Amino acid sequence: MISAVFWGLEAVFSTLFIIDGRKIITCKTLCYKMIASFLFVAYAFYRLMQSPANVQYSRLILIALLFSFIGDFFLGYASVKEKNATRLGIIGGAAFFLTHVFLLYSYFSVNNVWNKATFWIIFAVNLSVLGGLLPVLKVKFGRLLPLVVVYISAISLMTATAMYISLALGQIPLLLTLGLGAILFEVSDFTLSLKIFSSERFDNFAVRVIYASAYFMAQMLIGTSVLFMS
Image 1: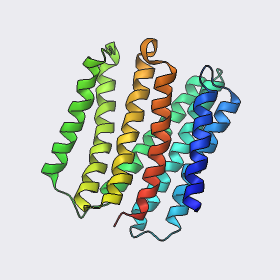
Image 2: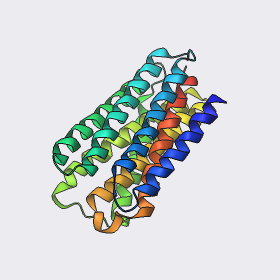
Image 3: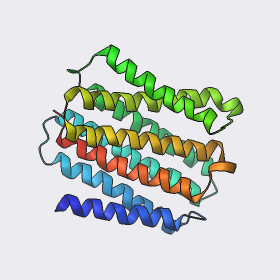
């Protein structure tokens, strides 16, 4: 019942954020976003309080989601407040960098299931898919291409790690929470990067719906995964 309330509220406020910021980001839009972000952190904390089997993994996930919350605030505030927007954006970007660090740390903390060959196959396939989409979508990054390659490699590493752990542990609930959550996180990151680097083609409402809805659902699923991580 409590989980359904969290999921329902997340759906409501993430939808309000998407719709309200359709044309311009306002303080009200930011409030909707921060409520949605607070909900996925609170939900992860609620799950942590249910005595999960892997406490270390659960705590690292909660820390990662807290940094996501911080990143959401600073990046959102940078969109509202033009003054110091660059500085706010840097702080927000740093927070999301730490989000990825702690997510990877939480995945690698599950150190009893590693098979390096299988993991690198999953990573290579995932990276190939993302890399192959760029020419199909006719995205031109110019001088930013090296940075984009590093960025795509990083999110591929995170997704491949989560997918490998989910498959290696052989638990369907874990695959549907951590595995699917990681994929949606990657979809959100990839779609947002298209919006940022090719705004003339991808800065539209459809792209906003994809990256925002995928992001919030990913965070909720990753928060749920603490129940199933052994």
